[in-house]
Length: 199
Image (cartoon, helix red, strand yellow):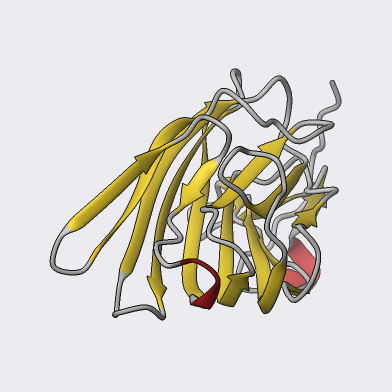
């Protein structure tokens, strides 16, 4: 293990001369002369969700501790719930805990173990907008938790969900599918999806 020592410090307010980056993390000195890790926020490259059965984001950096998955006008040609799956080396398709549902005047819910679910209450005619946030709960067990809040174009429905999973290693990929089983099935036909990465 290496130790990095700065011979002189500069306040965080002047990053051009005083702050450093090490192993994907930024460090600086605050007004109390204490070195601190600073949060890093990176916007990914938006992918059109207009074709294919899966939208995949790979090579997610190891420093990431929170991921916001953003949906804009996303739709598939089928009625399977949207699923967000994450993994280390390969996508994990089992072991998820959680459920999803929607509400208008009443509430309907569904549970699954194959991914973080986002309810698709009315099938192919629906487009969805909103976010799912995944947060690293425990780096020792690579446990992630997820919460979703989205809007459906059908009857002003709100979609929601939550869950958790522990991975075999550090998260490095994420994919979104339309499926009732956890395997890609429905084909995307509208919208775009992007990630916001924080560490």
